[in-house]
Structures are given as structure tokens and as C-alpha cells.
Image 1 (cartoon, rainbow, N blue to C red):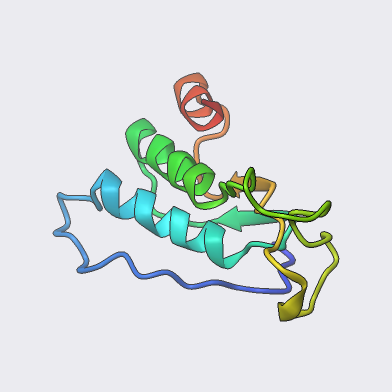
Image 2: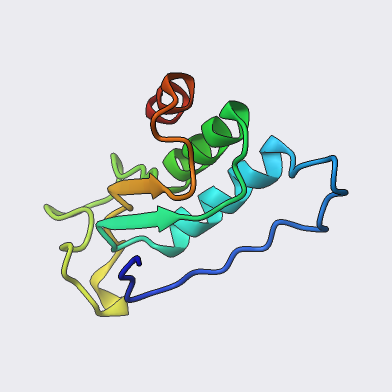
Length: 117
């Protein structure tokens, strides 16, 4: 099993027909939303229905975009709160640093390359 102190549920919209799958944009947005919700965490596992290489790439891209934090113009020495900060008043949290896509085809080279891009 997977040990997780927090579980984040993200909506993907209407369930597609049996022969269809969720489109890449829905997966990208869901992963981005989850990554933003998990700011302040070091690692997370994403269990999204990414059955194809393109879907896996969309999830990885969404996680990357959702965990991005632009801090160039924020004042002070510590632009982001310390990783162990729990207070809401301590400023912006560190972005999510590592995402593992669960249920994927880890041994498939194309799948792995799409996720690592």
C-alpha cells in the first residue's frame, strides 16, 4: 500500500464513454490543481487515469505547472516559507518538489520519457 497523511480529491468532469478517455486538458488541469493544493509537501503520488503516453505527459505537465512558484519580485530574504512551516501567516509555501504517477507503465520507455520530460 501507499502511506499518505493527506489525500486530495480532484474532479475530472463527466465520466467519458467506455471507448473514450478523459482528454489531456482535463488531466493536465486536475494534476495542476492537486499540485497547488499540495504546496508545502515534499512528495506526492498522483493516481489519475493516464492510460496512454499522451495522458501521462499531460499529468506530468500539469503537476509541473501547478507546482511552479514565481518569486522573483517578492521581498525579504526567505521568499518562500520554510518547508516545515505549518502556519498560514508564514507566507507562500514551498512548491511540491516530487510527483510519482501511480498506476502507470513504469517499464515502458516511451511512458517514462513522457513523464520525465
